[in-house]
Amino acid sequence: MVGKEATLKQPYTRNRSLDVLRGMTIALMIVVNNPGNWKAIYEPFEHSNWNGFTPTDLVFPTFLFVMGNALSFSMSKTGTLTQQIFLRKVFKRTVLIFAIGIFLNGFPYVHYIDGSLFFNNLGEIRFWGVLQRIAVCYGLASLLIYYFKESTVIIASVGILFLYWGVMYYFGTHPEPYSLEHNATTKLDLIYLSAGNMYKGYGVVFDPEGLLGTFPAVVNVIGGFFTGVFIQKKGNNLRTVFSLVAFGLLMIAGAKIWDVVFPINKSIWTSSYVLLSVGYDLLIVGALITIVEIFKAKKIAFFFEVFGKNPLFIYIISWMVISICYLIHVNGVPLGSLVYRNLFASWLEDKNASLLFAIFYTLSMWLIGYYMDKRKIYIKV
Image (cartoon, rainbow, N blue to C red; front, side, top):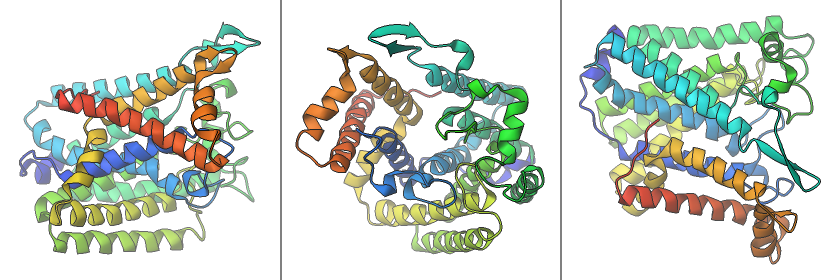
């Protein structure tokens, strides 16, 4: 359990810039997941088609990154726990988040056919998803950090990225081992899952949150962990900012070089994509420390902190509420579609209407978070 050495020397405190980053991530997650019209979206709010990178491709890895930030603080509490209690806590949280993810994949468990409600086929609920990957990454990263020295965790992280590259190249179908149709992640998932339990949005059987791609995603969590440790050691000052920016630029440069042979790709979570996303996260953290901690921009901080204080709960509620809005029909038309059509599409161009609907919905989730924060209600999963 020597991996706790650096973090246990630090008192358990909160870092406002990291709280803001967590809130920004949740806010952007809700915006990109809830456009008024999926066929009318501005390009920065769409994922890359396959290889490549858009601002939206940074959202998910940043959530993993801020989870690692949180681990760097919570380990100071964990150090007072026995190994048995620690393991129970980690496994309980991992299983719970994973189970919530499966629950959301099936929610609301009914659908319309010709105006009548029918139950979904429970045997074809998608197995993997965003929360499932978050759960597994949290569990694996927690165990690595708890049981091993920091140097060992760093070496293991580098090893994971290179090993993943090798697995993807060797087990993918050539000459295109990193393509949608021929990648190794699908081959592995189809060994233990049926096609009905996998994501169907690509037109072929492929799950972007499948098992194999979860392993390099653990490195995003570890990157966030070491960033949190570094900030606790060095403090919120310009020297820390310069260091974070320098590390970030180096990682982005490394990602661009690696991209030549292992393309930057969110869907199969390539190693170059991990480097790129962690690099950008370091730049963002540096900017937030400057704005929030050094220049004390409290109003900006407060808005995003509301999201950051109940992140998983607000994410879950945002998923459920929008699902219910499209389940409820008024004169045969989903309630969500009626709101979009009458309040936004009636006077705005398609893409503007779609974006404003997403922003409106995100602000409604902020009000829920604000209500909870004012009453000191913080729900931890």
